Image 1 (tube, rainbow, N blue to C red):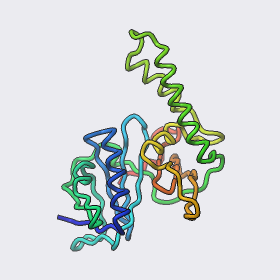
Image 2 (tube, one colour):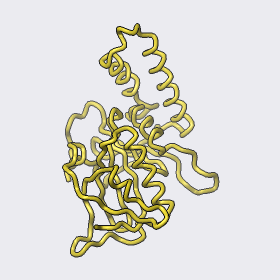
Image 3 (tube, one colour):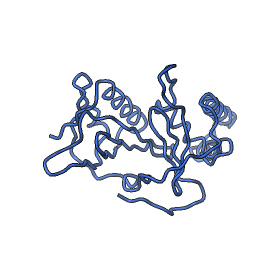
Image 4 (cartoon, rainbow, N blue to C red):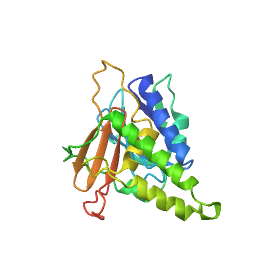
Length: 228
């Protein structure tokens, strides 16, 4: 069994929390793991948000397993969560699974450039809260016989596809960031940067101190796909 040695128990706890949130939205969730040096990137796709969530986890030492010096595998989020030992700061790598389609199409590694216009963190949280309230209000206004899945999906698409400020980032990306714990308050004096927006090709990435949300820009189709 391959064992990942995480930087400390805090990294182990954060990894476990991220996996738990993914499983909350999809009990059969899969994640793709990739290592680069002493960084483990964990990719997941919570249903309904239509985004990719990325959590970077610090490792105590670079991954190395025989002749393999880089880990790249898709596996069960639930099995990985069960293997996390927070006190020992380790995680076993379970057997690989046949990954869902999204696991073969990841954001590019480089070429990211800053994008202006992202509102402040408090404004992002306010926008999500207002969108959630609007969704509840509009669905509650529907007569019971009109409250179908198709009707709810139509209202949700309209609300969550709106863009933020002068950016092309959809509100659903910020909703996903908040739901996965990426927009939680940063301790004062920590020196941690505020959320920022970046673009590379057809991809946008909302980077926060706790993780990133990547999403394809609307209307650009399947161009610039990065298959690994």
